[in-house]
Image (cartoon, rainbow over all chains, first blue to last red; front, side, top):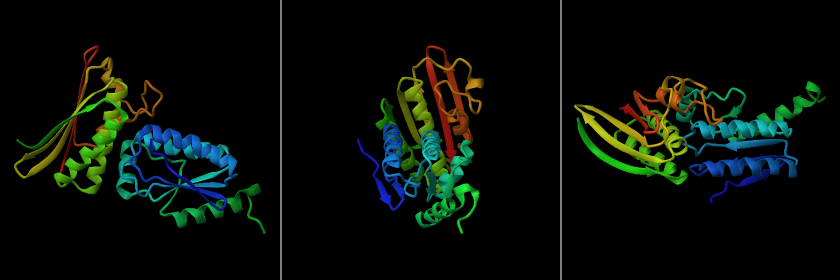
Length: 127
Length: 134
């Protein structure tokens, strides 16, 4: 079975989905990613879906689960690179993913993670 | 109405669902659907193929590329001989689920296509048919 690689980039984990995702591959990713968040003490996860051309409700739910699970483990998830056609389809399907943070590309996602970490401690920015 | 292409595949495993998605994409491109419309019908097909596999215990998917005058379309029909859906109206509601999913499969895929038909008989099975025009 294919596996989705999880790369460490400083305090963050980068997951780039490049395969047409099998349900089981998605479940394995959830398990491995949560393990890695803890073992690497990751502060954030960048989930790059720029190569994904279909997000149905199962995959959408998996993306939502990853975001919720990582939040519980004190890591923020940013979904990056969603294709416009996928965004239109997801919203019409009824899955707007309101609690998920997104960015247009990995760079922008990284900036978002960095800035959110600075302001999150005690709710104010460091001096 | 002319049938330009016609294909039938079995839906018995997760691999078949991936195959189904790729085949629907291929037909949508063949019929000249826009990228957004391709994505919509492939997503709807993915939802329905998963229903056929999980709720219907497997079945098959029939795929047709149709033309009627200048109008071209892709039609996908999912057939299973599973337990059937006792209350279609309820099953079509957003958020209604029997297996802990999001309950968007049927209602959501209906929104993604131009034509949607469902026929189900308890203990006989379910047939769902969708069409997306160019």
